[in-house]
Length: 229
Image 1 (cartoon, one colour):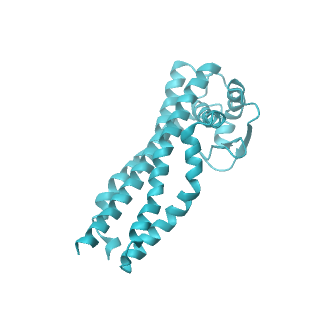
Image 2 (cartoon, helix red, strand yellow):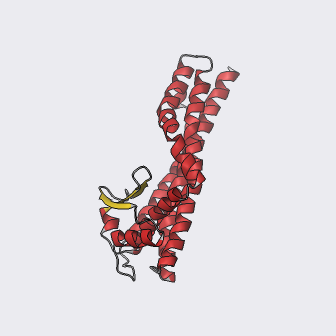
Image 3 (cartoon, helix red, strand yellow):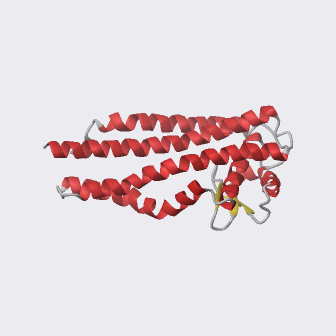
């Protein structure tokens, strides 16, 4: 059947390999720099409070959350959530991760356009990511006119989301480095460690965009095959 077409791997394999490499980079960088104590000897929680103060965001709350590398900023509640390994660890990796999330808080405060756009399209992406493939596959199986195209359009919201995410994440990382410099929390050597952690994390977002694009290209390939029959 069409969804077992071996050509699928021609489209999927590069994205899969990139995703695996990105995860390796994240794990390797985090494991290395989470063992390297920062010169300020402050935990991720303490760093968050210091950086929020430097950014003039004392009203943003900070909470500890479950999971590893589950750190994130919630613009709805104006709160940073830090994983235990980051919140309690006085490491270089913790500084980079915390500063990145504070960067998102600054984006929110300044109404950074890509961040606002990403938040606005979340509902469409949540629907399109699961309904799109269902409509696409059902339309091809049942030979329903226009249904596969509708499914493809819905699923394409995942690529839009992934592409909009890239400037949001890159900008947050740039803000992170600037905030750490402003607060005087990193040496030149530590800054290179922070950048290593953040660049590895950024690669995962690139991999997500490539994965979405490869799936869309495969869907277009299947649609082209149906039209030729």
